[in-house]
Image (cartoon, rainbow, N blue to C red; front, side, top):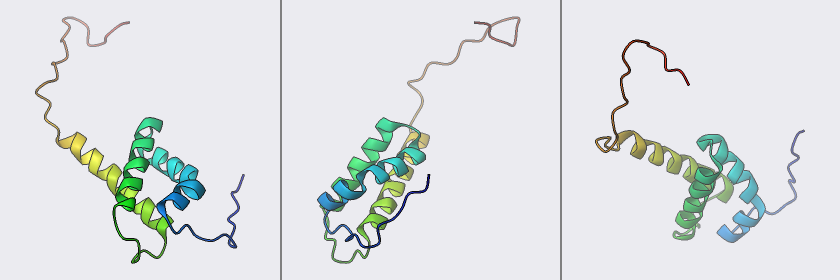
Length: 103
C-alpha cells in the first residue's frame, strides 16, 4: 500500500515536532539500515540528541537532515564494530574427522 504524503502539512520546525510527526518513518528507515529494532531505536535517539544540540537555522529540511544524521551514525557504528579489537574473543574449536558440525 502506498503511503500518501500530505503536501499541505507544515514541515517540522523543532526536534520535538520531528519526533512527533516523522518519528515512525525515521525509525523504519533506521531499521532498514540496521536490521534490528533496538539498534534502530538507538540510532534515531542519537540523531535526536545531535539535532537538539545544534542550531537548526541553516537546515532547510529537518527531516532530510535527520535521515542524513541517522545514516552517518549507522556508518560510524559499523566502522567501530569493524575496527574493534577481537583479542577478547575465544577461537572456535576445531573438530577432528568431519568437516561438518552436526547438531
